[in-house]
Length: 229
Figure (spheres, one colour):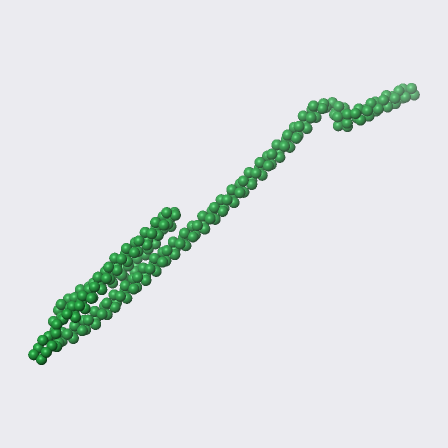
């Protein structure tokens, strides 16, 4: 009985001592002391945890930043590609319009020249018929016949040039900005030069027709005893 009392007394004293230590140190420090863990060890462990958490957050922010930069870069590249595609489409449309206008101009001018040559031919036919009547009256129309023949040859030459001009096309390949401007300019210059050459032939044919008309007009009537025929 005495031993039991002593054991109870020791237990009470131990509990009181532990309660006082708990109240004084706090539960965590008291518990760590009981386990044999020092305050320095606990602090180091806490700092390591906080450092790891901080590093993890920094890595997450760095990854998020890189993802944002990549997203912005991708969007920028997509916008640049879209603008470039639109620019190329615009240049293609402009090139097509220029080529169409050049073709229309060539057709318009060659059609006009063909009509003019046709009127010249019709005029020479009338002049030929008139000279035939003059020949019947005995007038000398040899000079006019030669002029008409020359005019007909000039018309044929001009018409051949016009027919060849009709088959020509004027286009340019779409390359860079400089090539675009240079190509369009060269195509226009080439068309104008070719049309100018054909116009010169048509103008020459027209002059030949005028000369034939002047020659026919200069034919003198045949003089007889009864008067001019």
